[in-house]
Every structure is written in C-alpha cells, then in structure tokens.
Image: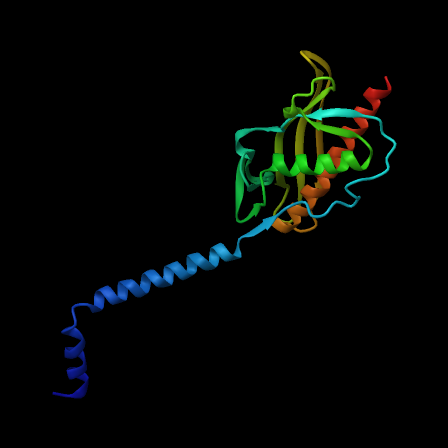
Length: 212
C-alpha cells in the first residue's frame, strides 16, 4: 500500500477528527465575533467648548426634571433614517453606539452650558419646589440621510416650564446640523453641534421668559 493510502487510512481510523474540526470552526467563529465587538465604537459629545463654571450674568434659576424620551431613544443605540428610501423606518448602526442614552447626554450638556452662563440649575428630584421646573421631551434624535452621501443630525424636542401645577410656558424645537461625513462618526459630531444649538435656543427662550 502506498504512503498516500496509508495516510488516508490512518486519519479515517480517528473518530475524533469530526469533533476536532467542529471545535476549530467554533473557535474561528468566536474570534470573528470577538473582533466585531472590539471594533464597535462608542461616542459622546466630547469636551464642551466653554468651561464648566463661568462668570455669566444670567440670573435664571430653574429645576431640571429628567428628560423624557420616546421608547426608541431609551437605549445607547445610534439611530439614522434613510429619508430618500423610507423616512419612517429607524435603523441603528451595528458597530457604533452612544456612551450613554441620548437623554443623559443632553442633560449633562445642558447643565454644563447653563452653569457656564450663570444659570442656577437644581435637580427637580431634590424636592425643591420654589423654582420653576423645566421639563424636556425628546421626540427625534437621529441622523437623517437625504441621499447616500448627504446627511444631517435632527433633534425634535418640546420644553415645558411649570411651577406647581401651573404651566408657565411651553415651546417646540426642531434643530438640525449637517454631517461632514455620511457615517456614524460624522453623525456623532453633527449631533453634538445640534445639541449645543438646541441648548442655546432653550436658554434664549428662558431668558426671554425671565425678562417678561
């Protein structure tokens, strides 16, 4: 018998070879899965452009309630819409996520910006009822693609200022900023810029109310 046929016979007599091959395949799939997990990127809003404590002249005092969101935004997913295909369908990036849910990202940024301009911000959960309470609801927090190469960050929100059971004022906001690149990285940067623009509009609104 030739060496070739003796080799085949040798391996054929080993019943554990199929199990070994299956184990190797599982290890290969696990390695691929591990690489995918490693490649997943996390984004936040980065460092603010202004210091956390400023010398602003604002005399506003507000209590900030927890920001409310629609169910889809109650996660770390980074959402986008293909407006040119199906604008009613939300899609999530597979390899990119926020470091925390949008409500927490926005609340953190809002407090920093307000404190920097001299606004006194109190957590509404602390039980202090002497100050007006600012409540914000997020309806949209996504990257909208108008084509395969063009997109913008879109935030739709409602703000309600109340004291006790009385609503003092309320307003809807719709803000957007263009994405420099049509991907998760470009969307994250545009969303940070859009959030800052939204916060600026909210601050201007509150300032106008305080002046009345």
